[in-house]
Length: 456
Ligand SMILES: C=C(O[C@H]1C=CC=C(C(=O)O)[C@@H]1O)C(=O)O
Image (cartoon, rainbow, N blue to C red):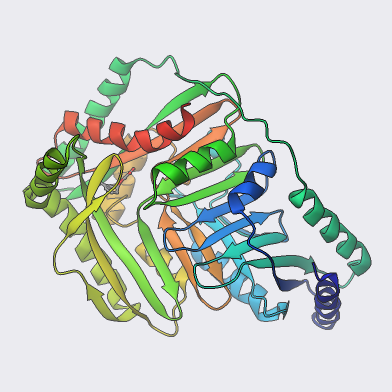
């Protein structure tokens, strides 16, 4: 590793920090030989400062440590984070063609009661890892070393610390696979079903009274294992079981939030964007014939097509003021995943030059694929009736770079892990015509993404 280049960047950052009398981010990019991200994860699985992204469009990131963390609370969390990010990157010193990259996530709803379960996950966080390995399909692998330098920093010490940190992360460690067996907790099925049925009926009542057109309700399940659940085992299984999904993991303090989501909230590359409406679900068939029948039925289901169209129209309306040259699929098609198939409508186009990805996700979130219509009424319905703390489930998670590129996904098919416990989340859209039992089964299928990653 070229430590001279890192040293140079730290020195320049300190000169600037002294001039400005505030901290300055130093970022150095070095090329490294094909590091295996999953291998690095395995070696460091016990760490509590890992940010991982295995994107479905080829971008992979793994970050260790924290050079700097932007944290925001409350109603203006998106704009606070966006302003802090802009200020940070405008001062940053970059060497070796480096560019700052941050990774993080946002809570689904800041007004929902904040429970103890999510205490390690603030309303909004963007982390600039000390060491970040970034790779994509076309470019070589980058090792990005970042540090926050103040006028008082001891540069020589910082360099020694960074060297030590890299050695520690890269150290060969014998892997000790954990044998976990999943046991469901004692919560009995009847009470779960009863709560679910009350929630669905309440939602249908509000729909009948025209207070709501759609609301996406969710439930959680708690699992206990006989050994701590290994992050790398879960990630490896998610990765191999869900080739079309984006796999993410955020470990903070003693918990980690992990998922394999199919849903892009907004992704940006060189001024162009991609997003999607994903709503309307059917099971997969056991045979190709059965699968075809289920898929065809979904494409013709008035209830599902309506549920989907509500998402399409809202996304289209929101994008109009933020993007130009918008192209969208004429009709929904099927997005087939291992356990379920969804209706999908893809969008692409250009981002208006004065908009950045964080401004845009603040407008898009929550789409009616996770909230509802009207959005405010649906959110207040969820606060009053859902009785779970969604935390980061169904919130935006992703990464961003200083050139305005990035990807944010909706954190679905996900769970929060702590020691020997996991809390998994799944939801589904309720519209006129939704049925309690089939919606329950749909959430059950959605849980299996995570359950299959935990089970032996
Ligand atoms: C809310 C979830 O899924 C959303 C995304 C796709 C299909 C959905 C549906 O058909 O209800 C949901 O809107 C979830 O997976 O927890």
